[in-house]
Length: 315
Image 1 (cartoon, helix red, strand yellow):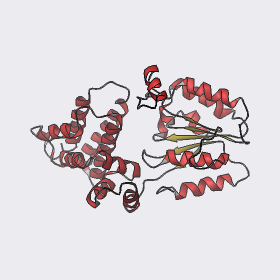
Image 2 (cartoon, helix red, strand yellow):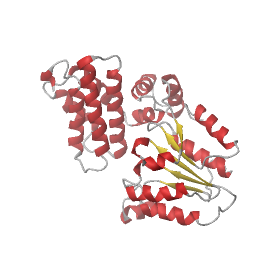
Image 3 (tube, rainbow, N blue to C red):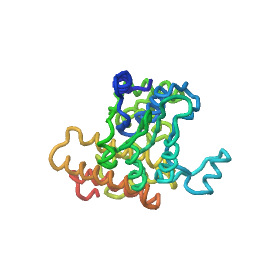
Image 4 (cartoon, rainbow, N blue to C red):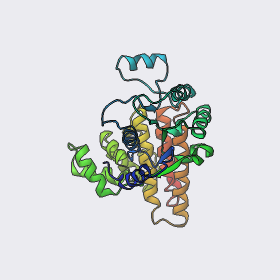
């Protein structure tokens, strides 16, 4: 069991043992809390599948290959680039499967990860299945940002919330998941992860300690001569991939949240404004074809703007 899942499993198992289990669930919480792993294990518990085994009555919908070229790479077992959204064609294919009975038993589980990334038409099509679910079909919608889901989808699902994990539990998780890392790296990762074991592991894998140090300096010192921002751009790298960029955004938001703790007046306002702008930029990044250097510079600028209350010349 992953850290922080104890309460979720208690609620899930209580529902399973009840007389009438709800047919649709939203697994809600910040990214990196292990919601996908929980969804997969919960799906296996529904259909009676063994861990690690493929089961015909568990359907998983996630980002498909970006195009036919990337699909051929997947077929050949090569790394491939994924599309930015879950498409309506995938929902339609799933619905065709739902017109038949489950293959091995009386139950079928549909995992959608992340449901936040459903195309608008795909979300509307999914709503039809949530409104009239076939007998024995259960939906598990992984969501990092439930507010992005259609209100009509949220209203038809039971919410299962995953809370941030304490630093001690994250340290224990990292000691097992990244035994080659040193104690200092694990402590820095746990402190910068914002309660997310997955983010902490990515912190170590992406070697983000130098990035975090520069981010915290930008927030606290500002950047009068742009030197810190230049160093941050270098630390992030010329062409960060999607995983690294997502980790950078997560880390920047966590740094700003840490700075907001105990802040008051103009200090709190500056940090809150920077955090809101960072959230907006992170939401735009997957959709707009931003130059990586531009994104790195913008991230540094927003972090430096949080120090504007200390010296307006710094930003």
